[in-house]
Image 1 (cartoon, rainbow, N blue to C red):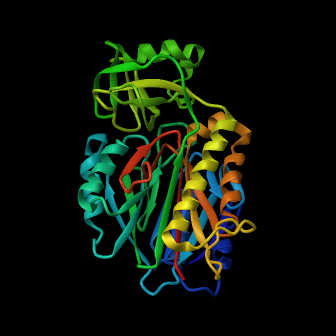
Image 2: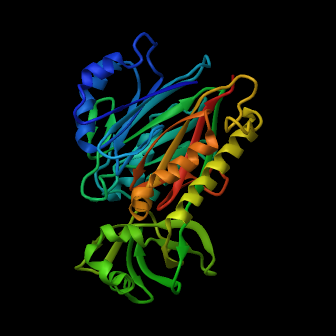
Image 3: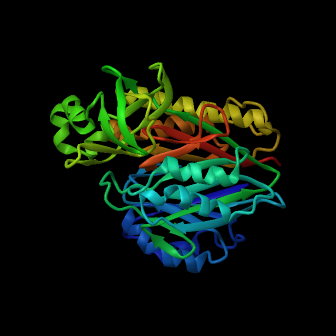
Length: 400
């Protein structure tokens, strides 16, 4: 696999830079676009003209991740060229009518992908009026358990008002888009880690519906949450990114999933979370330090690197990062990290991306975004879950 990348800025001549980028190379097999909203809307038409034959998939962000680190207000384009004879990407899109349509929209999306030879799916969804857990469930009903699903929900710089997704027809605020990845030589590896610590008592979920939490311990959920947040409560829902919930089982044990706040309803005292809640489970508030979050990102990268090696990409080369056998191959390190992590780390957000880059070395081009929700297999299994406040890493490469 050959991976190339360019970062566009607000004052760039978009057409001129695109014309010069990768000039003389064959058309990519896949183009990933992670961008601030204004640039995403500007680049859609030039990208369609320059890469008309290439599947294009992208979204708005709360920060762009590239080989150069973390950016704001930029547009990162990453082109993948498959070297195996059967390596290819097929795109699918569907409109999301509203949050209640999430599961059905996931099914519609997956039904467009031929299952024969399908190895994995990369999905991007709008990041506000969506139940990410239900979308994943709908996709899994069609794809089964043998196909990995990875990706994330679009961001809007922590405004939680309007997000955008890019597909072959342009940019849309009410679309889901995915690409199915095919090819016997393709290798996928995943790593997921948080770095958050729970605090306070476990609170029992006494009333919820899907991803809307109405009551904790018989009290309005919003009232309970505000008591914990104190002065931070006046900045809801944005301040909720700093204090996500740990999901606990009926025995109060952590299950490894985190839920973040997407919205609040003062009228009924509810909290809208980014994914489904266990109606028989418990929730506990969480907080984190920058050092803990950076450590979590590094652990996620190490898990992805170890999984890639187990998949047959070769032994560890201490000098170059992930060793890919005698012929040094290049792959993609796709990073989807939660906007809440970026808010906690502030100016030190670069450090978690640097930690991941250190693990992969020269073996992967880094690309990704800060999101409103992260999608990745969970706990070393193929089964996919919606994560919040997590760094998820997908390594995509080819055996040569």
